[in-house]
Image (cartoon, rainbow, N blue to C red; front, side):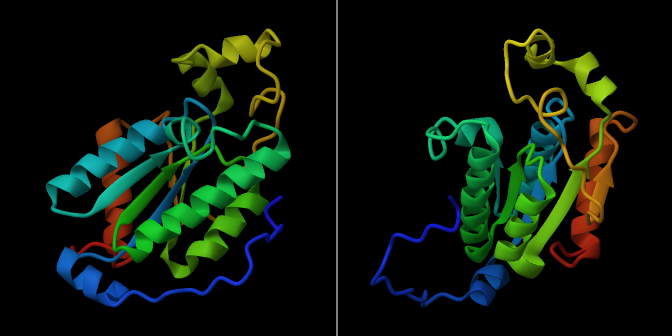
Length: 203
């Protein structure tokens, strides 16, 4: 699905405002923070909390949340491997557009397949920062705020990551955050420290 190119006779138009112009005005670099992990690992909670800290620091930041995007841009996609691949491809392209606008774009998606995350990394290039929200399946099932694991165990939800569909954990993420052991504040501090260490934010 992702390799089908149907648009022809199209030309890329370059902006008169460069990324460097935007980053100088914003006071920080553009970046794509890709939060990945099991359902209920805390991806969205952490991304939203990081966004609040960045906003208070005067940064241009925005969270692309998996559930929210499936209400609009990706509402035509299901959870088959092919649809999951297309879901991540679209978000990778959108996140790259945000990054090119000088934003710190954060994506909170399970994104279970390494190959799909690698494609998102290729789209964003050096701006890509993979954040593995590492909570065990047991911890996520114990939380289960939406009751999804219970439904998956009962066979109500097919192709559910961690139960009836695989999750391929990152092998070399830029940052791993253990949300089963760390508080939200401690987890946020790790992400901010990573952004500072990589030069996205000034220390």
